[in-house]
Image (tube, rainbow, N blue to C red; front, side, top):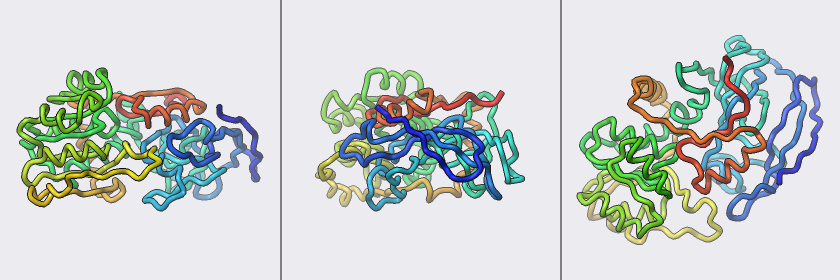
Amino acid sequence: MLVLSRVKEAGTVATQSREIRLAARPRGEPVASDFLLVEVEVADPGPGQVLVRNLVMSVDPYMRGRMDDLPSYAPPWQLGQPAEGAAVGEVVASQVPDLPVGCLVLHPFGWRDYALVPDRQAERVEPVAGLSSSSYLGVLGMPGLTAYAGLFEVAGFRAGEAVFVSGAAGAVGSLVGQFARLRGASRVIGSAGSAAKLRFLTEELGFDAAFDYHDAPVRQLLRQAAPDGIDVYFDNVGGEHLEAALACLNLHGRVALCGAISFYNSTERPVGPANLSVAIGKRLTLRGFLVTDHGHLRQEFRETVTGWLTSGQLVVRETVVTGLDQAVPAFIGMLRGANTGKMVVRLASDPA
């Protein structure tokens, strides 16, 4: 269970808030006692700051790495300090002329009800008709740009190619498969972990084939789903999935290495693919990437994807839990694959 305590903050008190802090570094899978829910008093914004009432926050796989005090591309969360992650909120007090009261902003201070946000870390976002504010945490946010950049720029996908994506029912994977289909893939294959997710992929998202990786060795299942091989593999899982993809990739195939969620809670050294040498004869390209390297695509990505959304060509699914006190269960559940599409935590209703 989360422990509730009260923390007095220095400064002029403006608002009472709650926030979730890192209480302990996990060994293996995170548990609820690794987090602490506290009440704090948040000061009024100073020059160059806005006070934001968070409406919705994100929980993402990469956050598991931030719980460890290890070198990584994202700095670790600090013990006793609030967890961090993307959130969209409404400005309720402002010392920034370009961010007036009432506007919506995307910022990195989730895991709390209210946040003091410096202007340099707040991106104003405009509501899109028919879409929730949570779209900027999913399809129009980091997961969407990850899928877009990884498929088109990193993997260099071309029309007529066959694409395989692991973790295909998640926030990124569900978009990768649809982007490939919309751009003329010859075949789109996905892996997921339940019959319900397979139906979602084939019946709602238009994947040509999907398999449950629990049913048999992944290499066998992928061979059956892609008898003519694959040209692009978008890797969200690593391990057995990557080994299977290497075996099934065609000549000059490409791999976008996005994530390795199969190892995130591992307490032992992960085992790499045993068949990496096939990359030589097949002249394969394996490229790791971070979405932060592809900000130059943001405008193109949002314009393209907004068009697909408003035309009804793109299907978006979210798994939504409500309340800050449910953020930790949502995070742990996401790491276990409990979500279909983007997992988000709703903290308050969108403005009318």
